[in-house]
Length: 333
Image (cartoon, rainbow, N blue to C red; front, side, top):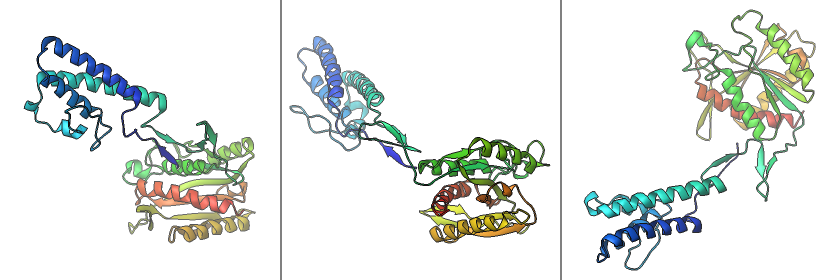
């Protein structure tokens, strides 16, 4: 996901300095009205204003006559006894003015805010524009066994109704990453296996049919599951990409579907592309004598991402990698 982070300016902007000047002037007038013969206090106020107006750690603020170049950190590290009562009051007023000024500037210009462009970018005039992908067709993601979860979410023998820690969570990452590429995604999070596990495939079939009828642009259908850890306690193999660990995945294909040959072609493309991009990421193709609703589309994937021995963090990373794999394959089909 592309992100653009707007940074604060290194120097206080003109409007902000104007606010500081007003604050300093007010404090100086109040101080001199009671201490007309003392310039030491005014020098201290000038020092504080210079330090607090600095843009950040290690960056110098404004300078004035007889005032050394100071930084915010040089003020913050001054001993408590070195700052007079007047100086403390000055610091309070000046800090307040700076804070108000920067808040106003952030609200007006968006500085300091991370702008996430999951499926949009800014043009030269700052207007949001959708990211347009040259990949044709949309992706539909759903879950026949929606409550399947990963470590450390082990409640209910790794079946929980909340979203966090489940296969739905993994699909959220896949969805966001695909949308960042400009690919349309429909993600259904209906709990087809709760409160009853029996006939989960019958209920998920109706959901899939409804989406396919409503959105004719759907090109790829994904039923995203996790596998169960074997009695040996072995979790799925993992790959490390850019310092992040991700679990591998398998694809299940139902041999009773009339479009079984087409399903196998698509599954092989996914495994091959996964291993081309991230060696070891693509696992096995598992053939079973069932349908698993896969007759609905020639581009149907029953994905098993990791097992309950993998952590949610490893499988979320898998979701992001799968987006890159799927985008590449969709360009070829």
